[in-house]
Length: 559
Image 1 (cartoon, rainbow, N blue to C red):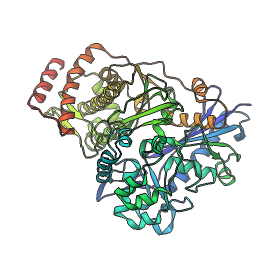
Image 2 (cartoon, rainbow, N blue to C red):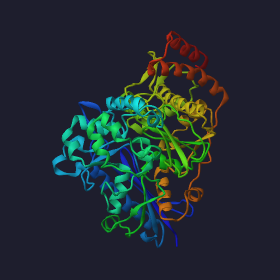
Image 3 (cartoon, rainbow, N blue to C red):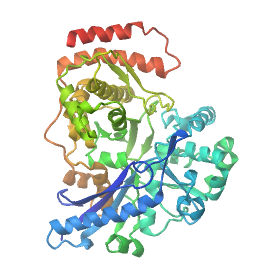
Image 4 (cartoon, helix red, strand yellow):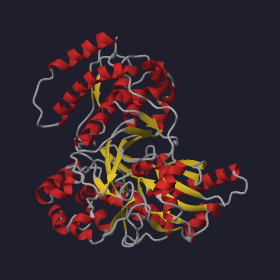
């Protein structure tokens, strides 16, 4: 009998399902649900641009819609398909996306008394309101617990667990007091399906705990009460209502309960794997292995690498954590990334691209790519910093902002688009240089996400700037595919490596660096790096007078 696994991927604006054949990776059913709340699923505060929250009800409604949608497609495609052939369910989400919950594990945002309170809702990964708290955590950790903060890249982020909780404590004590505990999005959903949302008994993800909450077995789990108490005594009290264990995603979180089996149209008892963050499961769905960097190209980017846990690995400043088991069991997972990529391009199109490029967003993107594809590197004379949503790696500073340099009265929108693409590639190269500096070898890059499939010019720019072959995952939904792999592993079907070999692949097209383009981009990267350090570090000393003139010189050669 055929066996299938269901992967559920919760993104920033929507959630999607993927039902795969475990013998060959065939994708037999998929469905998407756009979150109806807020602006494209995100609850905003017009008074504070750092606020980004979500409605937990959207997650529940989405789960039903996308699961039933995938099953209906499979039934149409496959004669005799039976939902009983689904053996495992895996889930990934954004993160750190903590949810304040009561003692039953019910999100406060679902309770009538909090339905209009943004602070009681889910705190989405890109909520940056806790930037001051993040700086405070960093300073105290460097003073009291330097070994802990070193595993987080040396700087704690406002996108992470403790920053958000401390921010809530200080800005809305009533909601904080009403919250018995806090549960990551990727931990709450498997618990919901398993019918046990008790904060003390639901299984927590080592991916979320290690990368965002400073959890490690090396120092006894979460940061100790003395450290947390120095931040706020309420955090020390909270620690006992959180967790002492965290698990890799090949572990079973539970089995599908009767209530949710009926809602989803599946039989009860199906294995549910421990959740994880989207990029980490996406790396597995893309076929991550030693020497491979998997780049998830989406609204933001996440870069994932692995190295054997039985070999020494130095702490790497500026990365988003080094966690044993966060990607694959038995390997350290190394996470880095950029806070705005697709979001940066979308902002440009929505706000600055004129109607002469088209009437719709899609038309404008297509027209700009066609126009810029004929340009040589450096021909526009433009250079940008990709920090419109702060810098995630290696500076870890959400209070950095974007920069576009070299504009003239002749600058056109597609040239700006290309400059932003190049800026994100320069940022990606900066991350790679940092990781390689600390002994992690990167031989190839596998890309996944819509941008890697839709924009060939972007991919060639990345290959030319980074200087390594750029492959593209066969699946357009590697996050959901990775989740399905873990669902099958939790069901005991096979180990992760065996499943990856059967169901993952890359596309035939590989983007190789073009030597003459590499030479020009090396000049541009030197200028980018100057701007990066000048605007991003307090230690930089120098002079920027040459930058504009050098851009003009390159433009005159390439124009």
